[in-house]
Image (cartoon, rainbow, N blue to C red; front, side, top):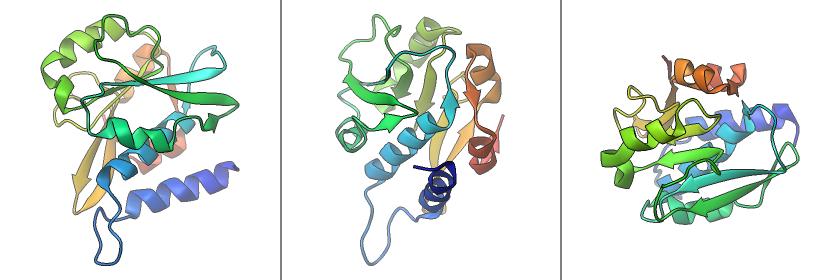
Length: 170
């Protein structure tokens, strides 16, 4: 898929309302598409043949991620790992922190440290605690904000196209 097509897709998804009268798109499906696109627009330092997205199986988004598992991102397969515990996040390239992770978010971010792990959430207030990308609803649309300092500390490069689409960049 060309970069132009990807950018058009991301822009289209970003402008799509969460619910319409005709055919509502489930919020979890939209969040899964956002996560996939965040991976497309992130560059990790030296990388293997797969990108591992880690999520708690308790999270409502876990099932929706089946729609993006196995897709390729710049020649690397996207794997979704449902972690029941988070003792070792070193195998994660993307770590999604949902509502079920709210109370242990600081601990999980401490375990990630400055490792090149893209952290994403849909929980209010976690971007200010160091999560790199936060999804939120604004006027019935899904939007996102970016903590650029956190991504830079980890050695991840977020595309300027992604930053341009963000509602807020910290």
